[in-house]
Image 1 (cartoon, helix red, strand yellow):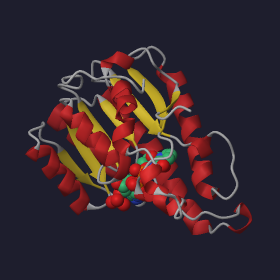
Image 2 (cartoon, helix red, strand yellow):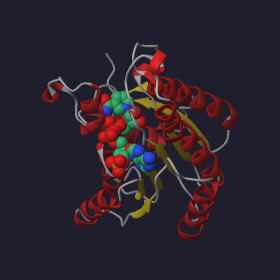
Image 3 (spheres, protein in one colour):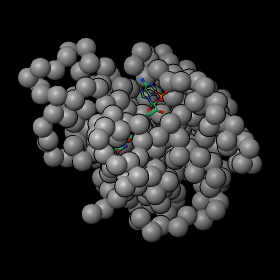
Length: 247
Ligand code: NDP
């Protein structure tokens, strides 16, 4: 999969929503999806970052994207209902959902975790993903084939000290993906996880401040996996948790 070479039109006529599209891995995924022909819906917290990605996509001559500024921490089911009905009215369907946005929270022993930080991490990393997936599901049923990708982590598969709420949220993400994958069965929708692995972004820098960032893979290096799971080349893949950087 890491050697997957997507055709230049692999995502033509697809509408794909990326959460956390303003920065890090989500930004690069959104640009790559647009580059391969998709109309991308850029959802994120900071409007100026989304606008910069929008400009980059337009300046490159890719299909015109849409911007949805939304803070997932405070989002309610009405926000997701409105989002679903706007997508339905404007595009008639949604072919892809990359649940990418997340926060690290504070690292430290569980014995001392801060309750409000814990709640914020769970809201952004788990509840928001569950809600957006639930409310966008009907409009994804209208696509000929649709792909939902959740974003996992190594600490969501094997417990590791001091990763706190973030690790717990990523275990929940793996469980959410598996449960969805069992339920979608033989519908037009498939549901998988990507574990990006150590990647040069601000989240990684916050978790490992002393690390030499130049030794890390970039988000661009991960794109074969992100493109594969969004393209029709992965129609048969469901319920998998895939490493974008296998050992
Ligand atoms: P970044 O911190 O670089 O980017 C996170 C993105 O999520 C930003 O666009 C940010 O928007 C957005 N976001 C954060 N909080 C909210 C919110 N409340 N509402 C809406 N959007 C929000 O992270 P990465 O790119 O590194 O991580 C992307 C995904 O990959 C995450 O799920 C992360 O857990 C996972 N991951 C990353 C690894 C790595 O090494 N980088 C390793 C394993 C997993 P804004 O900038 O506006 O705040």
